[in-house]
Image (cartoon, rainbow, N blue to C red; front, side, top):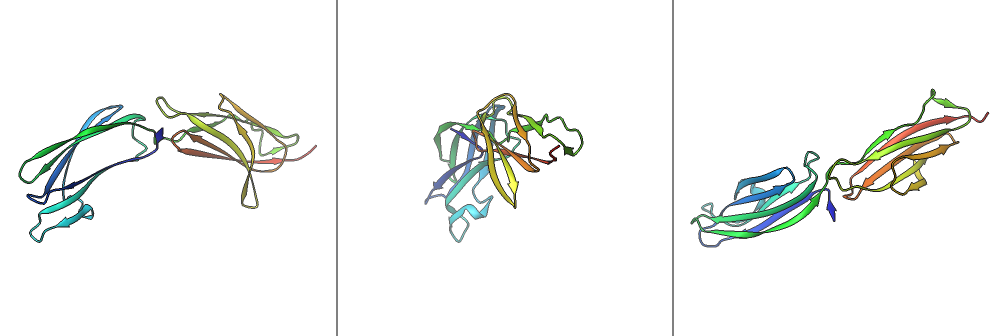
Length: 193
């Protein structure tokens, strides 16, 4: 299963000395990163704090949904620490397959101005980058009166074509296996000869 975002949460509690910090170890396709987060850095995550500032419960969170993330496998482990210096190791979870990048549509239609007398063949390619989740669907819609009506759906292939004989706005939607999508829009004026 592919994901287009990933949120990792650890709920920590310590009624004696209080929650201090977490050290995340994040294994990603482009290397391993270590991130330390102190309890109370983001006060919105504090659920229980004493009057003298000891945090009894805290939710640590790492969110991954940036398009700059390298696609591929991500795994997480963590070490929790309390204010007395005691630590606990959390087992590694994952791997999770992450792809935050949408497919790319390349228009190959041979345009000859903005008017066609005998129709035109819409032609395009859709691609995904290296290690990305791959295409799930490619669909063509026609927009009429603000509504989209499906006119063609393809199996995944190298090149997509569709003969257009009616005026209108045509919308290409490409969706990958992680749920990322791209939309391409073309307007055609077709006049029967």
